[in-house]
Image (tube, rainbow, N blue to C red; front, top):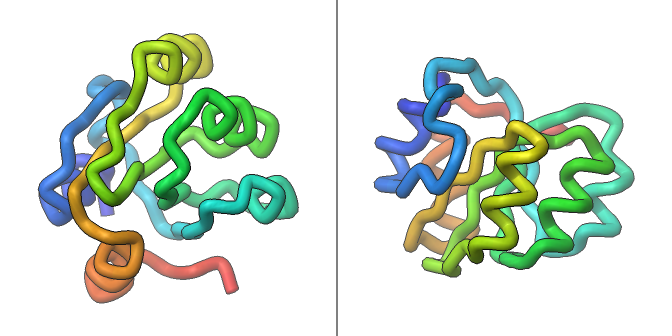
Length: 113
């Protein structure tokens, strides 16, 4: 599934990374605990409600570069600047983490575990 298709499915706003919309995504991981993100051995799309600069820094350390921010959280300018520096994609949507995971799973995105 492409990032563009994911954004459409989730009725999401593309906050940054418009140039990467045709890239394919196969796996996703959902967490608000950045310590869990740091344990990942693969690089899936991250679904999170944690909306701060630390999220971007953690994803950079874990080599994750596609983030879906849920629950209508507002992405800050500091987050966008850091994400742009690291060539990341950030989507933002109003849905709950549970609904996002269900929609993506139903559409064929695979979990890590």
